[in-house]
Length: 323
Length: 225
Image 1 (cartoon, each protein chain N blue to C red):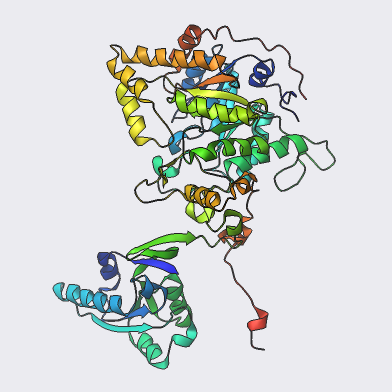
Image 2: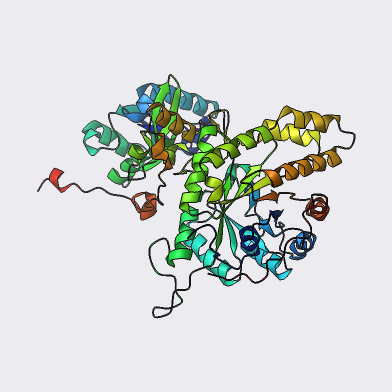
């Protein structure tokens, strides 16, 4: 299937295929079993974003499952992007979640390998990694397009029934900043070849490197094969920036961003200002099809950022015809 | 080789201190080479045990012996067998295979383990051993030009590095763990085979690994009638 064929009734897919600049957010599920926290965050995000990533035990800390929180978000009218990591579940568990999620109406699924368990709150856990994120993308594509499980069995409710494949708009992540730098576009290409429909990038604080990565992406024509959403997170303080620079692998900072944050009178406002400038540049950058705003724990600020970035109201997609 | 590490002395002593007579049994193969459980270590550990026992007014007699291989019956000579049967417990500083083989060969004898068996690894320099093989049962090394992503990537990723690779090191422990994928990439580049990396590798068949249950190899061509 070509990039432009409509595969699902996902709103995110509809926005991208209409050629609109997409805007996605992020919702971190709570650690407790009370759904009200998801509902509250969903209310902030609803209407301001096209869809929101529902993280899957991010930083390897146990939280409400992405599947459940996605369903609650949908109840609140917020379209979820259900994240799936290969850290915690093998191919059996993932496929069963995928057909279940599709049956519940969840369409967008983002394939990740997941933060290593040594960063989380169950450091003695066994990791799974039965498959990796590229294999996960390929598995979802096979399920959707061929109606087959990874093992080759057909996906249907009973033997004589019609195929009942899941409807999935398949996402994957790309990190333009991690090493080996020269591998990063190859890795993106592998994910596209495996069947990724859209890509969300690692958070960008090094525009120079991002521009270079996009140059390579365009040179290979990859921006015409996949939708790319640039990852943005407003910095809260210069301290946060310095901490991330020194302690988090796969994130790169240019010196001027840190300097701007240090010199700002109001660092929080400056962080948002930098994010707004990045969004402005992304809107004009060839091959960037939207922005993914990761404001975890700051979901409340998303509507005002969307407003200031000129991204409201979000486009109507109307009735998309499902393939 | 199989690389092992001696357990903390307190743990070893705790496991044997209440016996009157034990045999400290070393192994002359892998654990000798990785300086964990050979003749030399048996000599040191037995002295430590006697000293610790004396301090606690325990009557612990420690016999010493090191055989060529604990994982092979033919190296358990008559004299060793007699000693194993005469003591209250055998303290083995062979790897996990050796310890289990003693339990298998001498079903009435108590065996205690003096080492933690770690991995299949190589000796990188004096005092440093690194994991090199995960024993997955279906070797993928040719696809990666001799560097195994299953054993050498913290996530066992088969299609390239995650975002946690920085300055050649893995984010899981940037001081000690090298990023296996950086090494695969560097080697492919050196051999001018980067195009090979674009090929997507399908999910691995883990049934040949531990996931298929305990493994056994039967070579009929090697068996006696």
